[in-house]
Picture 1 (cartoon, one colour):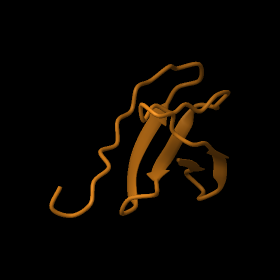
Picture 2 (picture 1 turned 45 degrees about the vertical axis):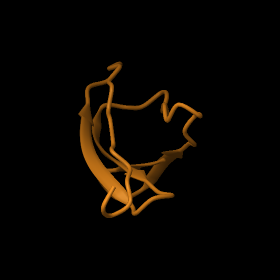
Picture 3 (picture 1 turned 30 degrees about the horizontal axis):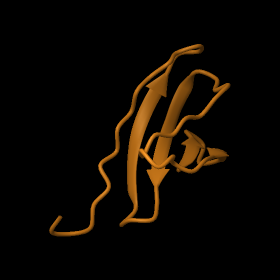
Length: 65
């Protein structure tokens, strides 16, 4: 998983656990894009206010699944 800020800068990267869960820590408020790879790439925008804890799901699948 890659987290990109509104200016297009990579802020953080992480891998998912065996259950598919992932987390990014110590983020400033603002707009971000979460990008998943390993399957056909998926991306989703999110907005955070400083100190938020948020759940964000991305469905990963190959075409036809």
